[in-house]
Image 1 (spheres, rainbow, N blue to C red):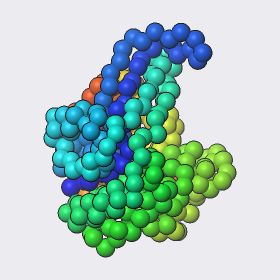
Image 2: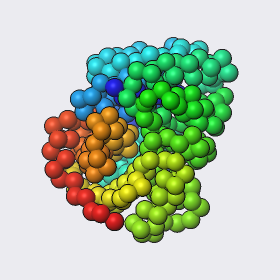
Image 3: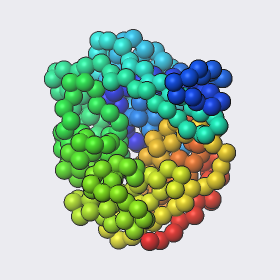
Length: 309
């Protein structure tokens, strides 16, 4: 079982334009709204890849039905702590010509100390019955920046492996609790080490600094340049698989889902990496209104080229 934590869910409204013009008139060609947030995305992707998955987190009365329907339709279990207010909306503008997305995100509704205490108890309860716990995404207003560290320490010794996918202080503080795996992108890793990482060797060496600090595996998404993964024994690189990009929304979350599938399957680092890269690629090749096409994922597994660094 993979359990994901969604502390700041969002309704993602994606609008597609032929060519995005900042400061100018942009006509929408296609649009859709989906229940999302990184924790939700990871759980849905894991379910689509054929693994039992559940999502726990905060939920708000206004907008909740969209989440309940999407999770149920995709056979993904959920358990929410209900709060007053409404689910935030994130707007994503997809430029078809460039294949780029511009994001405009709301902060979310505020939570209080009582909400956080209930959430910590809920996470610990589910951690006792899951194989992999995924902590990802932003934190809502009112939530301290070290809350991921708090949750990681709360589940220590309960038998699940933890994946942390966050940025900035949330990631830096969370690392202090030694999660099993972290997944920064290149920019996030550069921010962490305080310098530009120009080569794969630079990225590998930067990743290994966090392995020395207690993280077992560091996976780094590099966008169009592919991805890299490292543990204490080896470092691997996979270049981008050329596909027709239909949507990049949720690609990083789907990579986390693939990696989590490898974790619960007790796979080797190489096989886990292959699953993560194939999953992210399949997400890009899947229509934006779908989670991830499992048939495309299976086809991508054989197309992942892995190089040892």
